[in-house]
Length: 153
Image 1 (tube, rainbow, N blue to C red):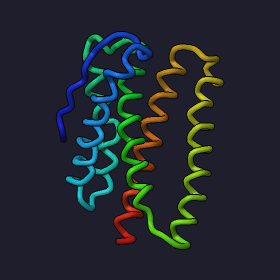
Image 2 (spheres, rainbow, N blue to C red):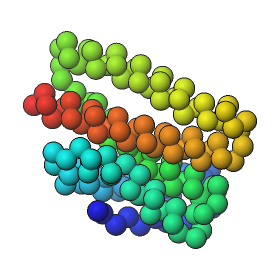
Image 3 (cartoon, helix red, strand yellow):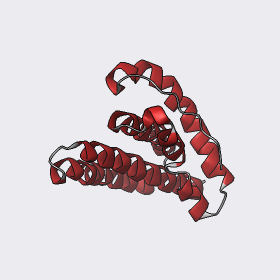
């Protein structure tokens, strides 16, 4: 498995510009992880959360904000990959169908992950669970859309 480096720092809102460079590089590491898994679906899925798990182990990230930041960095990386794979979707009927499915999936993901905030009354655990959900759902979807793209070639 790839070893990931997690940078620590101030609050998420203050980190946006600094984090961008980190998640962009992270997207390439995650793509390498799923590429190295070849045809092993279990190994591809194990890539989801691989950065966050390492990031959260750092002492400075064992807070609500630190844990949330780890999940959101990986979420942004998966989202960048998902967008890349989606842009390379098949044309014609398959492409049109994938657009419809993608719109429905985004609604589903947002409702599912947003539910943690409602269920836990907006408490600190809700932020962590919602962040983990966004990372996990987006990572799994990126891997799925990548497979669709590769099958169409």
